[in-house]
Image (cartoon, rainbow, N blue to C red; front, top):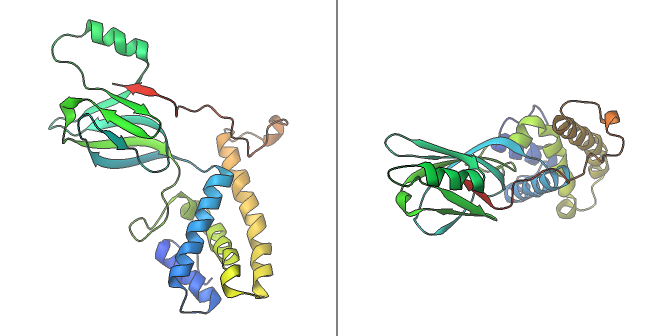
Length: 222
């Protein structure tokens, strides 16, 4: 690798160059994708501020963004945009009792489906949410993993090339470089979740523990 890859195309080119083969462009993309899946799953990677846009269809369930974990707010793109944030059912009921005039728009999230009321049919919407990193592609050339750990992606993809390239002495070298980089990345992500405090303050907590508060269950918003 002659330099640190800054985007998806450079990462693919670096892998192709390291293997010194010009016939593996598609395979390199697959190895990168598989490495992203492993890192997202095993390290439980998340991005805190993601935005995506869509068009609402009244009364229909709509798929939420791929990889979403929790919705912060939704902006309805009226001439004067309206932002809706989470409230609980009690607050929603109190507001419905106290309000005057036309009903307020609201939505409900069940599982990974989004249901909007009839007022917003055909309206543009922006979702602000927490979720897993969007996979790298030509249309999404940079994501959290590539920003934070391009070396992990690079060597991880090379290790995953083993089944394709066969018996190659370089695989052991790539694996020896990859494992400590991956471990350091996992530890760094854990420290972020632990509030930058020493893991020694949490002797009974596994850095890979997934038992963290989640809002994935039914949520109601205004």
